[in-house]
Length: 343
Image 1 (cartoon, rainbow, N blue to C red):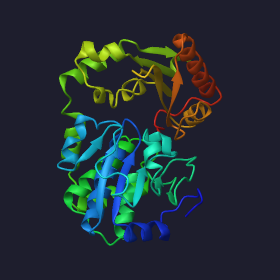
Image 2: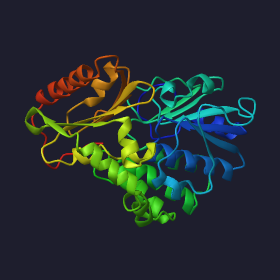
Image 3: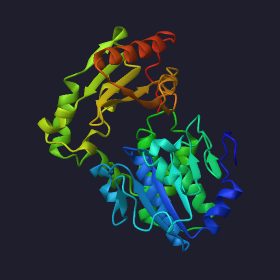
């Protein structure tokens, strides 16, 4: 399939490539989330179950909370390629990346034929085969369909990995992408051996002390704008040192200001060692933060998006400009119903 229209069916050329190839290099976006890690781990296990070779290469490490799902699955991390690259691999398979540079490894991965699998609007269809299903609640749900298309078994460990991806991308089934498809997939995964209570424990009840202290640092920067409709927080490099936190301990911090009553959009500004700022945006209902990110070279969904901005010598002015954009989007729409939520 080389068009951007939603498709629940797996394109034939996508299935053929996975059946014909012998070795696959899986990847996902920088700072991988639960859908990225869960989908990678599950797809690697599925490919190996049908006699194929699969390796995972990410630019950034996975959050510690995902260790239970990763288990013994090796994930190669960093800018240096895995052993045997590129000759060892027939295809690269980026997951959940609307454009290849979201991986941070685009120059290396571009040396291989690309199988592009994603659920984001605006995917650039950069693969030799493209499967883009914008109605999928998570790429993990697409991987479950792919297992069926390949007649591959899904064991309990694979089901757990897919459940992690589905659960995190739907906000534990709180967001508007918690559609019938999401619940159908969740039910099937539980039947296949997924353990929701165990995954919830890993995600929400196993935080290291540094992660909790980092939350305190971030909440200390909380600002409300637009009569309480907008919240913004900042994550600065020295906060990690003061909190004794690892880089991956920042996962999920944006959800806390988003939980404030009346808040319809959140902007988290994360300072990076590279000298720029990563902007993460979340919203509810009709507030389209995806458009804001897109105008700045980023991407994502209507209600969950991000981009990078150059701080230069005027970081505070750039941050203020983004906040004004978010406020302008929110003011063009009526206040969202309290019960309405979105991913």
